[in-house]
Image (tube, rainbow, N blue to C red; front, side, top):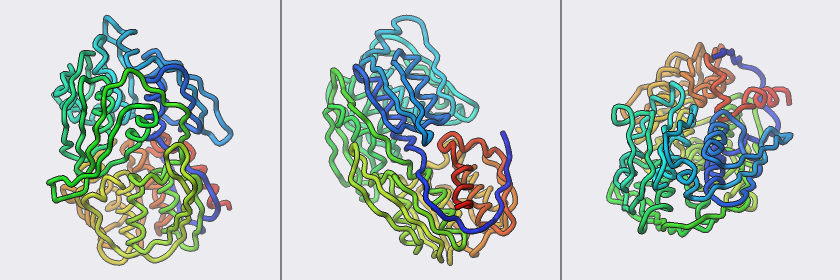
Length: 448
């Protein structure tokens, strides 16, 4: 993979629209394939990860029509094959599905395939995906009567044999939107009422989209025994069919976070990021920024397709350290590496705890963030469930290896812009997994 050096320069100015939301694009394509007839998906993300999902549903028999837009997004039409379509098309033999590096696809698709009654599939991917645990979806699916197996009991390839499922109540040991979504999708094909209890709220795109598609879904706020945290209890009932209707994909806050943080850190900067999804289960970073005293403001717009959106304004200014933990972690899980970077420039100590889930991303993001930022001159300590950063108001610079992780690649680029000496990012190509126009967008803000 290629390397690129990101040098400190002038302030970032201007307006941009982030790429479409990756999580919502994955789900829109999968639900469109589960539907019957055609599901239009407007402004979908075109990236390595989402392309893998398009290929996967096509391999299962769904129709995929894609038209490129001038902004780089895709307008899609997904020809659905119905909830039990994969089993009807794969009655014998074993089909292989390449998920590439798409962890969301790897963990959501098994929920659909496990309840097919017939057929068998093997899900596999690249070297990185083979290190990502799948036992967390295999375990609840097995409890539902599913026939699933994986390498060494926890790693891909993941083999699924379609069978009849029964409902369970599943209490997530760790808050995870992907595991929750897998069980909810399986619940559409299971006999009885399937319940998922999460210890803290996670992104709720799956629940919103299932309900909009006509599935019988109930969501109840609850108090879970674990530290009396506010969680959720989600119930889904079996369905004969779903109809997702038209789905509009908002901009991805997890991608927008990188230019936003760059503007907060580079002196003299001030930018607008428009069309950003502001789902309440995705905006944990904005709360963290508020506590740190960051110059970040939100202009809300009318909700579209059940997903609120708006504009984020970010400007440079002083920061103070903070603590992130508990129920806040799932709401900011993909942005926690950026919290570590912000902590380097803040006054005082910044601590992230309760972030064990970071160790199961494209890389071990706790070890990778700590090692990467320490190599750039940060005073940062690794902890089992997070890290602690002592703010110095600056970062020296140096070199950072993305380890093939798209968010680490973009973290290194932003660190370079804010550092004294610049940062050489090895594997910057990984950014294309979620943000194909990342480098050109940053360049446009310098040129504005």
